[in-house]
Structures are given as C-alpha cells and as structure tokens.
Image 1 (cartoon, helix red, strand yellow):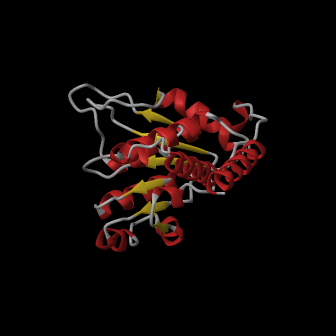
Image 2 (spheres, one colour):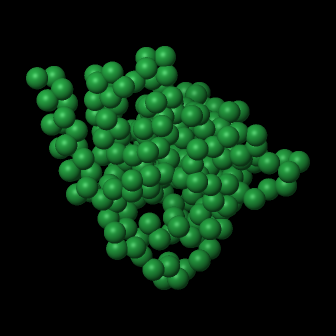
Length: 230
C-alpha cells in the first residue's frame, strides 16, 4: 500500500488498521505531513503495520521494487490517459500478479488525489463504483474497500501468470535515459518538457517489459547516448 502525501492521521491510521484486518503488512507513505504521520503511529490495532511503515521521498522510490503499480481514482471530471478498471475486475488482475511479484496500490492525498506525476508511475488505474452524488470516498474507507475485494477470494481461485515483469525502478531508468536522449537530440521542446516526460512514462509502462527486455532497452539507450555525445 502506498499513500501519497496524506495529511490526516486518522486516515493513515484507518488505512493501516484495514491492512491489519485483511492481512496486508507493507505500508509506504510518500511525503506525509510530518505531524499526521507521527500521530498515526499510535493507531489502535495497527501498531505492527505502522511500526514497519516506510517514509519515502517520492512515488518512484516507493514503487521501485514493484512489477505492477495500480493507481486509484474517483474519476470525476478528470481526463485520464490510462486504462481504467472497476474494482472487482481490477482486483482480479492484481491477485494474478501478486502470485508473481510485488504490486503497489497507490492512493492520493485526501484533498487532490493523485497528481499527474503520480499517475505517470502507474500501469493502469482502478476505481470503486460509487453513486454520482458522492463519487469520492474517505481515504481510510477506500483503502478498506479495496483490500476487502483483494482478500475475499481464496488465493487458489486465480491462476498465476508465467510471464515475469520488469520492476518499476528499471522502467523509471528507461524513462530517464529515453528522456535524456530525446532532449540531447533536440526532440523535446523545453516548454513542453514536463508533459513529454509524463507521456514517456505512460508509453514505457504500456510496453509491459520483462526484466530481460528492460536490460536490452537500457543497453540500447546507453549506447545511443554515448554515440550522441561522441
């Protein structure tokens, strides 16, 4: 579980409590409001989860060892560039990947949700079906609903995939090298550099690379950069 920029200690504590309820133990918190994070460590019934919680400087750091990163969104009027699945189907996809490696389920801040930069690290998005009058849910409640859906079916009900997937850290390195190469070649307009990087992140993650494929891509990009600078 990854919480990006949470500010309310009650929400952090509720998320940790839900993790304890449904058998999840790895909580990573990105740039939390320090007072909230400190107070949440005393969450009733979630002491073990909060004690082991990791404070990360960025989403990239929090998901670096994960082979699948799933963002959560209430959708609203936002225009998204990712595939979006409803929770029941998304949970099935996540359970399949959990049989192979680490998966990050990413939640945004209480006020703004996930930023465009946060979304750039996601392979796809998931939403909880809610009524139109109140599309967004409280952070702690949203975490609990998602974890219940993940935990409610026996593990044996899902066939594990055989394909191995590159970790997020490798995908981010490919993104950085590709962006560097495009900047040096003159492809990137300085005025649109930020949006170009967001598009590259989404593009690289859609490739669904294996660890071996990621290694080949990194080798090719390093060679191209060396030639560009020679």
